[in-house]
Amino acid sequence: MRMLGMAAALAMVAAVPVRADGIDDYIRRQMEVGHIPGVAVAVVRKGKVETMRSYGLANLEWDAPVTPETRFQTASATKIFTGIALMRLVEAGKLRLDDTLDRFFPDAPAAWRGITILQLASHSSGLPEQLGEHADNVAATVAAAQKVPLAYAPGTETRYGFTDFVVLRAAMEKAAGKGIAAIFRDEICAPLGLMDTGFNDERQWGPFRSALPLARRATVHAWKDGEQRISGFLYGETGYAAGGLFSSARDLAALFAALDRGELLKPESRVLLQTPPLLKTGKPAGFGVGWTAGTWHGVKVVGHSGGPALADILHAEGEGLTVIVLTNQQRYYPLLARRVADFYLPPAPPPVVLPDGAPALTALMRAALAEAAAGKLDRGRYAAGALQGPVPFLEDFGQALLAALGPVQQVSLIEDVPGKDEHVRRYAITFQNQAMIWRFAVDAAGKITDLHPPADD
Image 1 (spheres, helix red, strand yellow):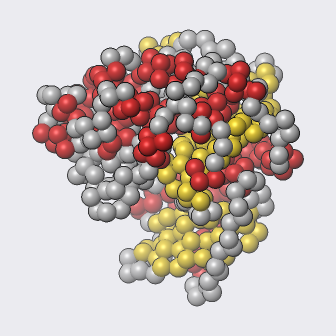
Image 2 (cartoon, helix red, strand yellow):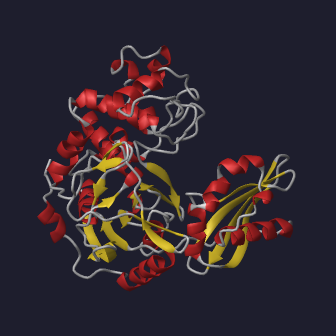
Image 3 (cartoon, helix red, strand yellow):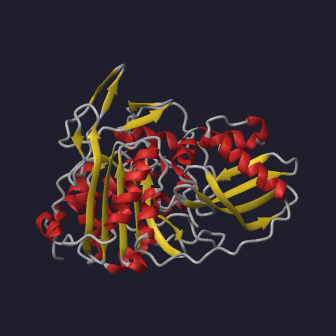
């Protein structure tokens, strides 16, 4: 297998970035309305780095500019690396996707004998998130998970969670005979010459934090109540297979260019990486091997976001396209990768607009959006169940999203599914700065049960 050096990767950046003006205008507008200090963008097409662009500041205290080598916190997009590293171990014969957990944890409960490595990687294992009090390390987390009942039967549904990837990490480390940071180094970073990718080993003892210094690291900020603040979320070492990896646009572009050219994984491994396994219900899971899977404008896409938008990575295999967007704004929704992809993907077909037989529901939806955008959510409009999901979203990241989108300009009903207990609708909404689809639902009493933009279009 031919290995890719960093110099070779940078040499393949196209001499004339295409669509630069439109992308630049969009990114700069979103930086303004979304209060984003700095952004790095890379676009990879069919094994070549087509464009790499940097905007704004990596650090507001020192006015340090973003460069292609700036290290951003990738948060949950770390799972992209975990999935690739797992497939490298599979290719090396160190474990199999259909291995059950008793191979790695012989003293585990009987229920774990029906859980496979693939189910961990695709968030369909049944492992619970509520583990009770335990020490913050991998061994203690695995032990705690073994003591509580499964949340659901393995392979019957998909639930995104943290426990899956702690246990997956433990299994990978047993198979490889080394820690997760060393696995990433030996299986991905060293073969590709990645120079900006790694963990800062941040720890907290009581009120004190310490971390390894990382050159060119972007500082994460959070805009709230009219001011920019430094955001200090702790990505603990226990969760390093799930989040906490720092990387740069340069490194991520080199990684996806190498994957495109088959220089890191075999074709069959890439297919497995991107394909959600079938659940026992016959429906596909929501994830491939650590990668999200869905559609955008009718095109199959995979990738991951994290933070929720510190990293936003979208890969369209059929189009040979990868879009990488890194930011240092904690309070922002992952909008950017899909919108940049729009400059390259075929235009989306216009949605079929339905006649609105219940305009009062549309008026309620518009009022709820306006209240959320203004940060003045009327909780009395929402059902009790929505207080645990949609409402916290709309009061935090949803409010930041709506502020970045701007005022509503046009609303079109594109799906209408009345039901006895819940009336579900989807709207194509044109905001001042971007068009999006939103899902809206009310219960039999007319209380809002859901209001959010689905990941798929």
